[in-house]
Image (cartoon, rainbow, N blue to C red):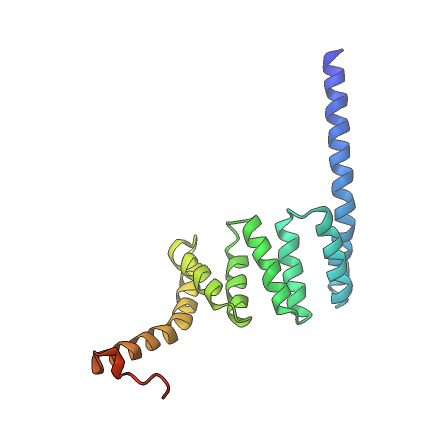
Length: 166
């Protein structure tokens, strides 16, 4: 009798999980059906409904991010790539997309940190190379600014001689 009861409990739990998953999946399925029709607003709404039910679905966050990009919502896409990246720490594509969008949306500190992490610890040579180049593109103006300040300090060792208003 015990094995039958255990089997009934397992089937009941798995049925509830499957039903709960199907509710979210219906919205996500709708989102994917709307994408080829280029109904981005409808797809975004369906992704959001699905993600309310499945907030830990990294793939859906990433797909919503790409859809938001198509709709022209770069800050929204950036935020969804961040969620996808945090939910799946091994998704380097999401991390790169997040970093590029941080740079594009005036969040250079987050971009620099993410590119730096990927160039040092990325799993693939391609990720490391892409992150290295992007890091250098962001870091180069900063390095030039620091060099200018060093030159100014060398020319005027007494900081009171510097005229900061010019």
